[in-house]
Image 1 (cartoon, rainbow, N blue to C red):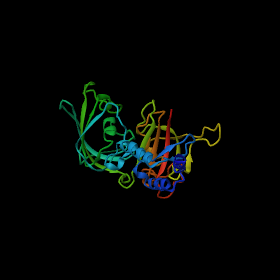
Image 2 (cartoon, rainbow, N blue to C red; image 1 turned 90 degrees about the horizontal axis):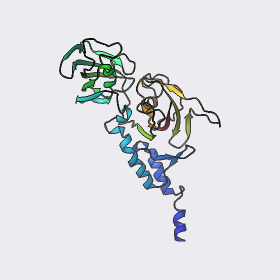
Image 3 (cartoon, helix red, strand yellow; image 1 turned 90 degrees about the vertical axis):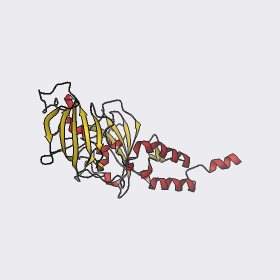
Image 4 (cartoon, rainbow, N blue to C red; image 1 turned 60 degrees about the horizontal axis):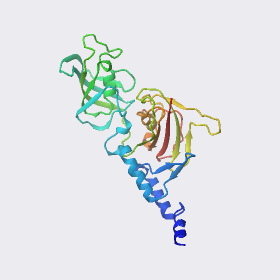
Length: 307
């Protein structure tokens, strides 16, 4: 009888467990306190211990409100390395923002290159529009306004890149760009007020998705109470649905999705917790598709990167 009584106390109808679940869902910003069933519905964890473990497991991956934004940025940039001599202030630059900067160029052995941008004649470009040298466009991502960074780049990412080729620089030369970031527009929502979360339940094996690279994805959008708000997948057997195609940096989709796909590999799956501040486009234009987000609530977005 003792063991039977214990079993009656475990179902989800236990008011104590329900209270814990509701509190944790209400404070969604502390982590992904949920798992998924085979039908892909939103299923809260069944015990307080499981909930705490899920939060602990998720926090190192997704804590963007702690002053860093690494999960919003590509994990690696081909052939580039950077060193921040002086940190800036505020939110870092991401794909799709317009930046204004100054720079000087030299080889890594200290030989100056007659190429620069000054405060009187700065360089302004939008990250992802391919209007600046790859070393600068890729290397500026993650900088904060007022920051001072040195970007180290190979020849093919600098003066060997299409449109920037110079015959007076050796093809084996590695370049160093001394950069000061003057401004970033438009501003991102404050991460301290709009914590944005990323978790990867499945890592893909295909190419890395980067800024300005057109992507094709399936998405499912859920409210925190488990209601499906939107899907690109077919709702009937045999219906494959219509994948969403967009280019990060063009402000075509809501900000949480635009930034959330960067750093994925094709074939991968990613879960996003998207707060209200990230449910609109970066530049305030109409998003595609129009998703009926619940007012002032975070949502859960499942993303699958398709080949």
